[in-house]
Amino acid sequence: MAATVPSLIQRRIVVAAGICVMAFALIGVRLIDLAMFKGRVTGASVVAVDDAPPVRADIVDRNGELLARGLPVFDLYATPHTFWDKEEAARVLASATGANLARLEKAFASKHSYVLIARQISPDVRDRVMHLGLPGLEFHPAVKRFYPQGIAAVQVIGATEAVSGGRGVDGLERGLNARLASGSSAQLSLDMRVQYVLESQVDAARKKYGALAAGGIVMNVNTGEVLAMASLPDTPEDAQKGIDPRRNRMAQDDYELGSVFKIFSFALALEDHTTRMDELLPVGSGFKIDKYTIRDAERMPALMKARDILAQSSNAGTAQIALRSGPDRQRAFLASLGLLEAPHSELAEWSRPILPRHWGQVETATIGFGHGISVSPLAFVTAASIVVNGGRRITPTFLKQDGDRRGEQVIKPATSAGMRELLRYVVTDGTGKSADVLGYNVGGKTGSAEKNEHGRYVAHKLLTSFCAAFPIDNPRYLVFVMLDEPHGANAEGVMALAGHTAAPLAGDVIAHIAPMLEMPAAAVVPHAPTKSNS
Image 1 (tube, rainbow, N blue to C red):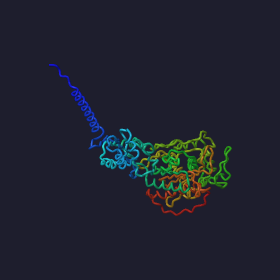
Image 2: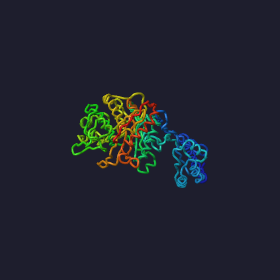
Image 3: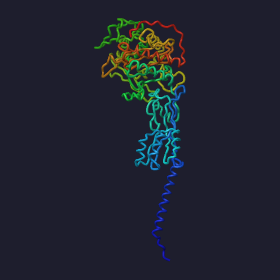
Image 4: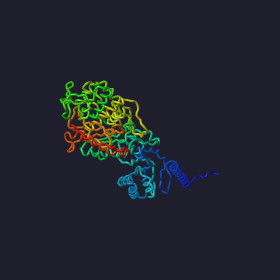
C-alpha cells in the first residue's frame, strides 16, 4: 500500500504544535528559574528572594549606644512591557517608593526591558509596593547601613559603600572592615555624651571667633582610649563651600602646633637635669642664634625663672633650654614619645609627621617652641598623655579597653611628676588661667602658632590650641582643642592668642564632661591668680 503524503494543513499543524511545545518549555524553564533562583510567582507579580548579602555587624559606643547597624533592604526592578498601563504604573510606583515620576515615565516609555525603580527600599515600602498588584516586579535583597546618631563623630565612625552597604570606605568602618564584615560587632572607646559636648563646645567657639576650622580630642591617659574626637566643620552644606566635611583633621593632618610643644622641651630638661626650674635665664631682649633672633609675641622681663618661661610661654627662653639638650638628644627624646612616626590606631586615616631635613642648632631651638616640626593632633595628644601619666607608653585606640593599659616606662616617674606641677602652674599663674575649672585642678599649656604659608610665617594667621590634663595631681583624662585662625571682633590682636581663645574652650569642655565621667569636684579654695602676660 502506498504511503500517505501529509497534506499542507497537516504539516502546518505539526509545526504549530512544535512551536507551542517549545514555547511552553521555555516558559517552564523561566518559571523554574524564578522559583528556584530568583523568586516566587504571586499572582501576576514576581518577588525576588535571592539570598541577601551578609549583614554587617553593629558598632556601639562604650556605653552600648548604637552607632551603626546594617538593616535588610531591597532594590526594586521592573519589566515595563508587562504593565497594562505604563503611565499609571509609573505614577503609583513613584508614589509608593519616592522615585522620580518623570524618570520612571521616560524609562517605561523607552525600549528598556528592565528598569531600576528604587534602591534600598525598606521592608515597609516593599509591602506597600506588593499591594499595588503590578506584574513584572522583582525585589533584590540588599543591606543598608544606618547611623542613628546622624553626623555625630562622622569622621571617626566613617561610612560604607553607598550602593551595597558593604565595605567600609573611611573611618573605623574601613579600619575595622574585616571584623565587621565577619559579623563581629565593635564596642568603641567613644562616649557619645562626651562626643556631643566636645562637638558643641568646639563649634560654638569656632563661630564665636570666626575660625576657619576647629577640632578636639579627649583621651584617657592611662589606656589610650579616645573618648571623643571632633573635626569641624562637618556638615554636608560645608562641602558646597569647598570644605571636605568628612576629613578627620585630628588624625590625617599635620600642624606646627606652637607652644604646646614646649611640654616636651621642659620634660626633656627635667629628664636630663639640664635646667633647674628656679634658674634665671635672659629673655627680655630675645635670643640670637646664627643669623636669627628669636623674640616673643609679648614683652617679657629681662630675666625669667625657667618655670615662668613655661608659664608665660617665652620662645626665647625655651629655645635656650632646648639647646642645652642638643639636636641628637632632642630628636631621640621626641622619637621615644612616638612623635617622629605616624600614630597607628584602628582608624583608616593617619598622617606621617613632617620633619626638618637638617636637624641642627637652629632647628633644635625652633622645634623647642613648636615650629619647624609638624605632627597630627592625635600624635601630640598621645605623647602628652605619656608625659603626664607617670611616663609610661600608651597606644591610641578607638576600642573600649579594660583596666590600665600603660606599658613600658618612657620617661622617669619623677619627670612626669615635675611636669604635672609645671602644667598646673601654667594654669594658676600663667597663660592658661582661663582653662581652670574649680574643683578639678586642671593643668595645661597654651599654644599660639603662626601659620607657615609658602615658607614664611604669617603673624596674623594663628593656629591656637590648648592641652589640658585633669585632675593634674593624678590625671585621668587629657583634653586637646584647636582653632584655625581665630579672628573677628572677639579675637583681635593679643585677644586672638590661645590664652583667650583655646584655653577657655578647654575649660568649658572639662566643666561639662567631668561630671559625666563620674569625677566629683573636690572642695578647694579658689586660687587668686596673678597677672599674666598672654
